[in-house]
Image 1 (tube, rainbow, N blue to C red):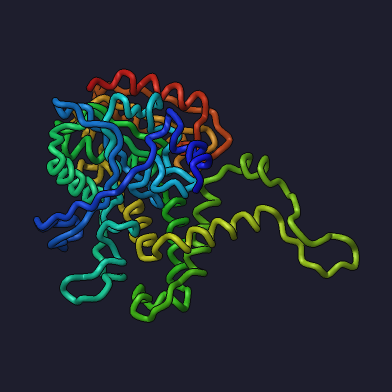
Image 2: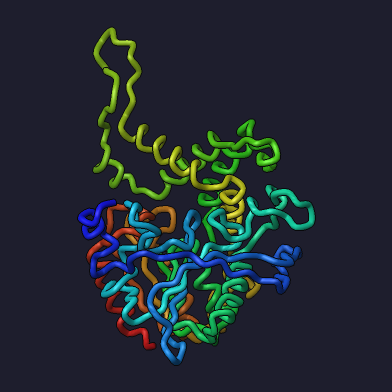
Length: 387
């Protein structure tokens, strides 16, 4: 890239964190998992933005959603055309302000972007874990994140923040380690999945496991990959992340090719069909099928109040932090009703909570998009997060 091109690259913008480099943190202390199995050793891939202050009191943990990873902001090279997945909200002067905070973003255990997961080598067999990688729960991620905080010398997070599955982790943090966070930001999330959500996840998993190339999850041993099944799984998931209005506004019934003319035998392809196939193809080239199954199961298993006699008020009675809960009007995957259940439980437990329901046409994906009201209320709340 020429010098002229370099100066024009968005990573040089004043509100961008610029070029970032992931780090690998290795842990030798065994981690006992909720399923009863143990990971003897594991790696976590991490990115950080901003600077940790002398008191180590300004750290923010970002918990990612189902298909997320450690690369939340900035660029990995001058050749990158696309920044991290939450770049709109992380950076100088943005809601999660790198001038004020030290932000930690990681790829969870079981992930496929460098942290130990199904693609990794099982030290006991010398082969990829594949489908034998242990089932994980949100609490397992939280415990591994707590060890990461210990490694970084962070005794207490200024805030733990997450959207969707990330919001579930943030809530679990507030119950498992109530003294280790001052604020909990829960965006487009729920205390447990509805039966409909579980059904969508099972349908997506079935698309993967029915692919002839799946080989019971041991496709790496066969030098193949269930690309078709994973692509369909992503298409199913993507439909649930969008709203009917949003799809209608963006695609309507526009035709990409073909004709309805009488006598024409050329098949018609709608724009939405082309878009979904593209999304499925791109995703299946960058994500791991076993990780997708693992992550969706973790979503299904999550139930914040299960061990508290199914009483969310009792569960939140352990919390010591302040909460921000945000939902979006057209999010039918994690509907505003689910967020209001969280708020009602927090109020019942006499915990400080702020709640906003944001008008949006973007469905569940709205939490990733710079919507004006969402951006402003998020910014105002984060200004009140003491460091």
